[in-house]
Length: 238
Image 1: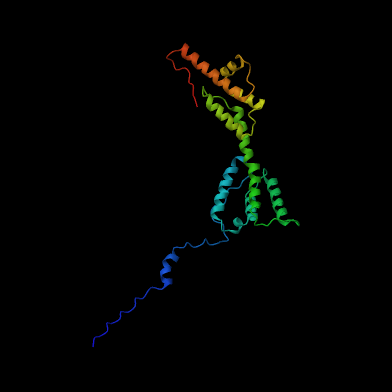
Image 2: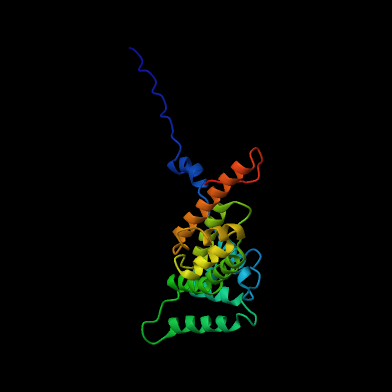
């Protein structure tokens, strides 16, 4: 009688939990919350507009290091912490007004704003920017416009720089006062040529630009004809 072949023992498979273990080990653990703020706090802002951009950069870096902290997670405390880093005679009154405003918005009897509302921080950030950042840029641009002069014969650079500063200073480039600034920044001989040219004095900024370019081209042509072979004039095109 033939013997039945011996049955092979079933292959045992690893438990599912054991197979999934390596994958589970790759999951990054969440950042642990802590009561202590990490990193170096931003420098105290004393109201100097020249330092406002530096303060914002330092504060944003500090915020990134402490995103899991309650102070940085709740917009109300976020704004209050920023205000705690501002002190000095040039900003104390503004800081006090902002503290009172934040408290009034969140504690008023009718329609109080929740302290977790992101608009509390966004609106505060806008108020700070308008008061200490945009104003500084405008003042700096205005000061540069007052002393801006055409360098050598580079008319195109002067025109582009003038327009850029007008934009930063919120100057209307079509007004008579702004056009007067433009004319005063031109080289003296170029300005005299425009004022005494046929056709009258320009009345728009475009006419001033066209007249300046036209006189520069005439000057370049005269120099070429009167002084052949001598590089006495440099005309730069955009």
